[in-house]
Amino acid sequence: PAFGGVNENIVLCGSEDSCIYVWNRDKGDLLLKIEGHTLMVSSVHWSPSDPYVFASASDDQSIRIWGTEDMPMCEIIIDNKEIKRIDPSSNFNGQPRVNGFI
Image 1: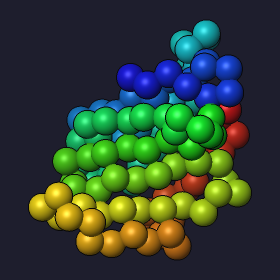
Image 2: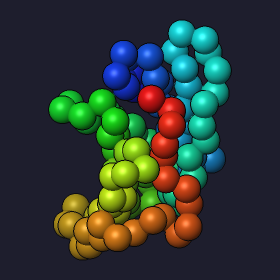
Image 3: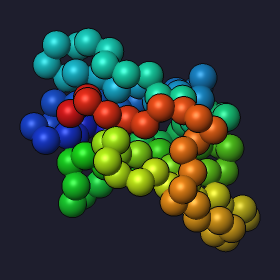
C-alpha cells in the first residue's frame, strides 16, 4: 500500500484483479475502485511533489500516471525495459478519471 494525499489520509492498493483500490485511512472506507490495467497491479506510488498525482505499475507492462480530473491523463508503455510510447491524450479506454477522492 501507498499512503498519501493532501493529509496523508489516502491509501492506494494495487490488486491481482488489475484494479487500484483507494481507501480512506482514517475511516477505512473504500473510496474508489480504479480500472485501467489489464493484469495485476504490482506497485502504486504517490508523487513526491504533488499530493494529487500517483503512478501505478502492472504486469501488463504499463506504468500509468493518475491524478485529478483537471490533469491530463498519461500512459507509458514499457517493452523490454524500453519506453515505447507515452500518450498524454489516453483516457485508459474510456475509464473514468480519478477525481474527488482527495
